[in-house]
Length: 160
Image 1: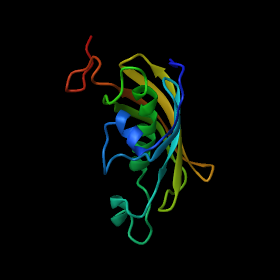
Image 2: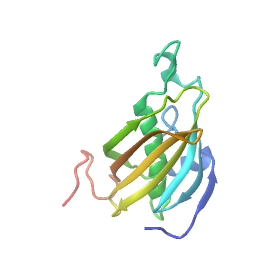
Image 3: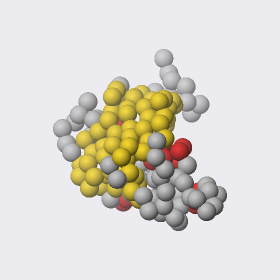
Image 4: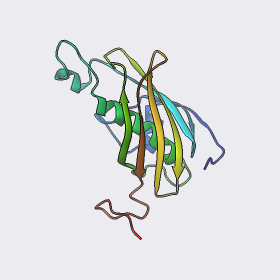
């Protein structure tokens, strides 16, 4: 799976070349290391300015679990979007399994994200993700995903 090149220290402008999400839904700030077809690691700086903190929860702000999952998934997508020919394509999650939300992710946290691509056939894939706060696992999951540009119709159904 690995295409033998490692990308280091991708900032937000470089990430935007690969990932189609945009504000307010681009949820990764830096990709420290991406090995196309293999793994990606980076982080999301969690700030009180995030819109969801206004209502989740007043007086005790907490990053919603599904927003945590989205940030982890976006980092995972870099493992395939950085592969030759995939830059700027869309990747969609189709299943999330074994979701674990273990620690509170609050304003001021840095959510360090580690991902590993387990399977990829050019159209669909599977990967493991985890988020850490101060070295302690805060959240994790396994995602299945597809690249609709490759063999899928607009309804999300696979061809063949």
